[in-house]
Image 1 (tube, rainbow, N blue to C red):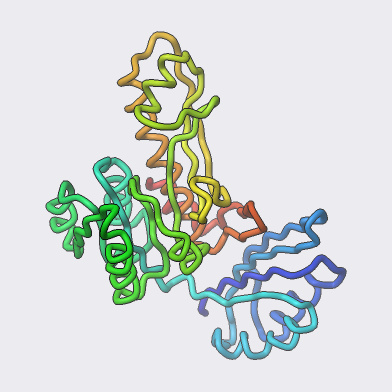
Image 2 (image 1 turned 90 degrees about the horizontal axis):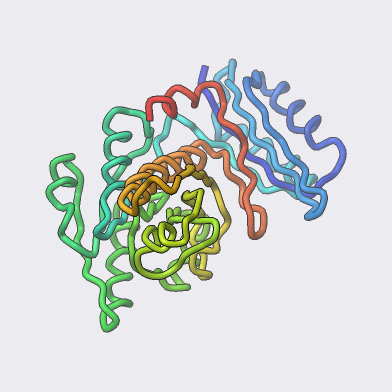
Length: 294
């Protein structure tokens, strides 16, 4: 029996769940996990199902047969094989905590992806990457060569067949064209404070203002800087007894955790774009083990 994931998005209407579940039953499929949500305000329904094909029906056959139902429901849909690991390119600059965390999770099997390359605009982490037997590409970025540098980045993405780009503290702004081309396929991580602090030394600014919470936000990248649809967030409490260096250390930890959880949600097809925000369904039972390992 092969496990398959079905994702569906369509206008809100009666009979959607019945139509989908009836079709799968007719094809000899047994649903193991199902999540759904109706956004009444935006008239959009979202559903994710995990099931097994007890009669060995292929994804291609299921997709071809479901097309007629999807047309009737005006639905976008896709069948996914969860055993096929998503190909990922990681990009990093000079802060290596997220990169190191992701490589460790990947190496022990807690992050079930296929890391196909690491790109940086500096040489700082070449040895780390090469020691993991991964291709390392140093692509320098300046004001003068930015279009050429971005074209080189896209060549790596296209040559490796990467499905996802992860900005693991990559400190360069991507062009609007690249953001549009890779829409929904670039995940970023950045600090997020209450209140928010921008510019240099954000943790120092937070310390000087005496904040009580620091945190991180992971989101899809859009042309609007750091304003893409949010996938995952978390905070950690700090006190007056801690130093600015403590803030930095705690911030690195929460950034790494939030980024890893966002990637997990994406690769398991649990994230649906819904305008300027996302629908993120909880993890299926089979996904919890790898996340706990992290």
